[in-house]
Image 1 (spheres, rainbow over the protein chains, first blue to last red):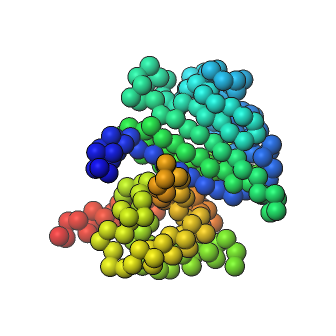
Image 2 (cartoon, rainbow over the protein chains, first blue to last red):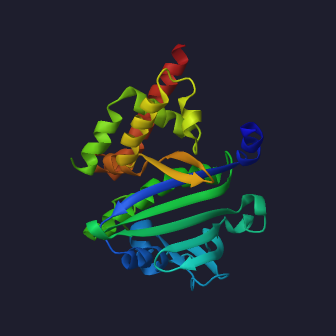
Length: 158
Length: 107
């Protein structure tokens, strides 16, 4: 019975990333949703009004075309944000639209948060799946460094 | 023990490295799937997974009643970034490719 379950699930790839950051949930939320902050540790601006159903885009500062686009599916500041994720040319093709969920959990006793990023509904073996599996560890390491020390990782600082 | 100590300690064991290899090849596996082909008890595998989770090298999600395990490479990236500077990355990648090509040519 697990094999039949497997065959339906295995067509989509899913990745889970976790990082612990010495910061507050509010600061982490801002760092994910404000373009002037994402630019500093990610090299791109995340832009949206972050309302359910709104569009969001991921755009390199100074460029007029977005690199990634999607819709905000769920928003509960400063704890949970779910959005779809696709290249602009693929945005109309459900098979090529993946999903990113951010969960921010404050760990009161330690003055830190646990940030979980789940990137699922990815096409197995796609370029996007490969790109994001290289990208997220770098982005999250840079975010952690930025929030804890004020400095992003060298690879991203502009 | 610092978080970084936990990472190095967790990586110092060949079984735990094999578990990470398996999760890298296929993310989101159950304990039972990970036990397959390993010559050790379910309990021993559970303990190794606990050490990997404590080091934040493995993340888990509950899907229904099943716990699925995922490779979480974020702490490894932090270690990497500590010693590898930006300008060295392209050269190291080129060296790595060169080595792979030479070794492939030999077999």
